[in-house]
Amino acid sequence: MTRQRALIVDDEPDIRELLEITLGRMKIDTRSARNVKEAREWLAKEPFDLCLTDMRLPDGTGLELVQHILQRHPQVPVAMITAYGSLDTAINALKAGAFDFLTKPVDLTRLRELVAAALRLRSADGEELPVDSRLLGESPPMKTLRKQILKLARSQAPVYISGESGSGKELVARLIHEQGSRGEQPFVPVNCGAIPTELMESEFFGHKKGSFTGAIEDKQGLFQAANGGTLFLDEVADLPLPMQVKLLRAIQEKAVRTVGGQQEVIVDVRILCATHKDLAAEVAAERFRQDLYYRLNVIELRVPALRERREDIALLADSMLKRLAEGTGISAAKLDEEALEKLKSYRFPGNVRELENMLERAYTLCEDDRISASDLRLADCSPTNESGETSLAQVDNLEDHLEAIERKLIMQALEETRWNRTAAAQRLGLSFRSMRYRLKKLGID
Image 1 (tube, rainbow, N blue to C red):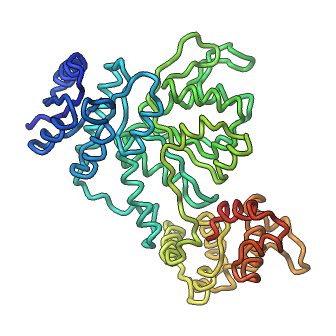
Image 2 (cartoon, rainbow, N blue to C red):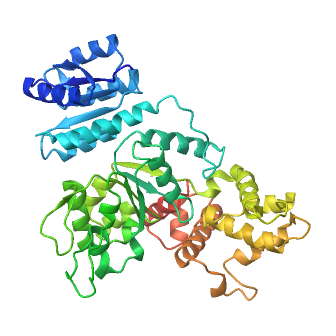
């Protein structure tokens, strides 16, 4: 069986020797280079399964080598070695496409974990990944999203997943995890807005028995539960500021201390996060720490709203209706042409989740396995009742409901002013800056 091969690039002989010995004990053949020129020569001569490179090299930088490998040898994972405390450098490496990073002095346990993860990823190259039935769509935005998921699955970089409520952010996070080197390890999702403030530290980091009233036994935290895998922080914007400080430290130090514990515990966790809020706006409003924002938002991945991919609605609806019919012994219902056209013209403020709820209701109302426009009850989804007043019974999510009203008024003002943004802002009593912010937040071009 052919042994796997790694390229080591560092101008310090001691570091090269340390890496060669460690990888040799892992049954990995190594080649060494002292600079960018020698590294390129090795890459032109032999195939490699992994590259470890220092950031500072006599004739260039590790970032230049990362970019060269991405262009010429995209199947080779690259890990960057940086000086201790150079977090900005490490983040730049991840943004450039590096798989992961190590800091000097090199921790050998961490090195072995990184190498093993990179080689697991490398061994999966060439495998055809089927279109996941959970992420359907042939529209250009969905094809782009799937490509981005595959690319991000090859990295260990933190990813900030942005998108509206109901657009499928948790599913995207799960697919990044499953298709990456941590796919066999735990995926731990947590809704940050659902944890009581007084219990947050215990939930995230765990606690020792007797550390506070009600702590009747030791409890593992979310970081420990996700060790080796991925921690998905949903609605991360809802974290209170004191907890943001503790989270930032845990991410930077790759270690946590349980409530009531004396020692820190090392954790190896990839962080993915999401929120339907504009995180940059939360930073500007001083509700979210800027340093944590930059640490989480190494790479941003935007999930398109359903109204941005209307051509996928028929495919999604067909799949959802088949799923509803499974196990019932009844054939799947079909949408008639008028019903499908109604769906395609609806704005879906609740996105895919709203479509699913709407079809589930229509499925129970329809006759002869045909869903008509009247079965969809789209009139019930409008913001007003027959008297023109807002009906609380129709509001499933206040924030989504208010956003839908705001979008409707802005679109009306833009259409009435022939898309003159300044005039539309004046008509709505907004400053131009405020108007521009709202357009960006609502995704209106």
